[in-house]
Amino acid sequence: MKDPFEFQGEFIFLIYFFYYSKKIYITYFMFLCFFPMIDFDDSGNLLGPSRDAVTISIEDEDEVKFNSQKKTADPSVGAYEEDPVSSDDQTKLLSGQKKNAAFWTFEYYQQFFDIDTYHVKERILGSVLPWPRKNFIHTYLRRNPDLYGPFWICTTLVFAIAISGNISTFLVNLGNPNYKYTPEFRKVTIAATAIFSYAWLVPLALWGVLLWRSNKVTNLVSYSFMEIVCVYGYSLAVYIPAVIIWIVPFMWLQWLSIMIALCLSGSVLTITFWPAVRDDHPKVYIAILSTIVTFNVLLAVGCKMYFFSKPEELPQKFSGPTVGVKITSNHV
Image (cartoon, rainbow, N blue to C red):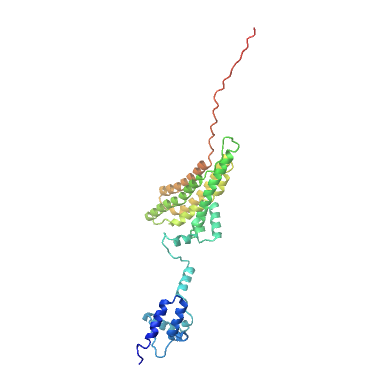
């Protein structure tokens, strides 16, 4: 056995060298010289299987029994096995089921914006050209409501009302020397408040009433809240061309476009919600349908009177009375 103090001089030298050395690469070189390196070429074999090693496989007993029974019943099953996750997703897609998410998450509202342009055009045409025997929900929504169309219809209507209102005010006062045009940006805020409140609060109230009546009467047809919001959103599409017509400074043309838009929009709402209330008491369904039509009329007439009303004439400056001086001449 070697004396433990045999390498004492070498270790003392290393300590002094590491203390006084300032260069890392010299220190690293000395470290490689005095300490042997591990051969990494054979390190991969450390992870390889060994002849004398014992391999233990931990599996669920039920899973092992199931796999053995499955292979015994059908030997061809082991050749090809589908991924359970992918098969589950495929089953959901084929069955048309959607993953239920909480209503406060983005995933819940994301499914209502997943719609093709073709379906949006079809629903807009169905709301502009209603047919007596075509229920909007049963014919166009088919239990698949969306928020993409209603959102952009409401947004387009807001800017159409604000812009058309400013243009109409400018055209009415064109040629008036006392008028100075100033764009009224507050009309955008007021129009957005009115339109989106109508498109969300009125359906919310109607959904609550229909839910209350469905608990009283068992034969009533029930609609979901998103379906009612979708119907109200698409029913506003007919007001966009009507608002553009309001730019023309002719009162008879403006009121004619209002009446046509009211009839089309009110028809969509009445035809859609008639099956949900027709089995109820006559006084109840008359009150519900009358309220639906009344709020529709208030929205159209209110926007017309507020954003497109004829402005009052500006008062003219008071010049005061004129004083005349009569000069007479006396001839002698």
